[in-house]
Image (cartoon, rainbow, N blue to C red; front, top):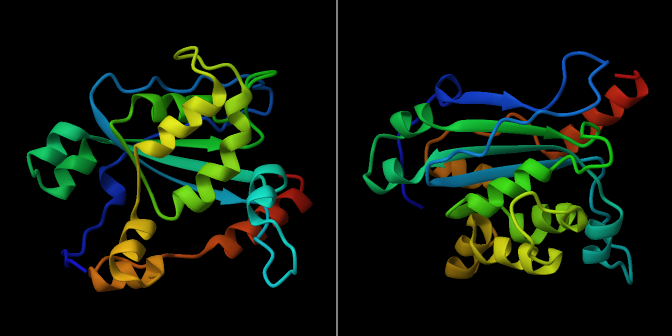
Length: 212
């Protein structure tokens, strides 16, 4: 794996969240989709883990019909700055981060409508195991009417998959080895993960139990 210097990225990102700070808020005014060409990096957390070792278990059906996302985060990075080879810090300083919550949506609408709009406009969509996990989990939300066009839901979904760079899948296909994200971060001398999907599931359930 290519090596890169360690960077503290958190201070360089403009943050937008669709999670309300007032319990009386029932509609979401998400920030607009950037009007400049961008690359979109995204990730999901969910409310459960994928069962393992069950005979006859249909993983794809479970992701599409049963597993629910709890939080989706996306980072829009300017394509021009990436193509010019600008320093990572400068690229991140010009980026925008979006956060979407499962339980926060306009009445009768989708909690990830703006995320799918970002997918529409992104020149490339980047994720880690996103083709095999994240995209199937939010596939059900493609049934909601698009604000950006009139493409049939399935065609829109496939177009988004077609322009996705799934880092895990690309490295696996090139090397024949399934590398964990933590291993890739360590090999590139980047800060490691602060937790994993199982932690996110536990935190979500704890918040639900507390009525948060």
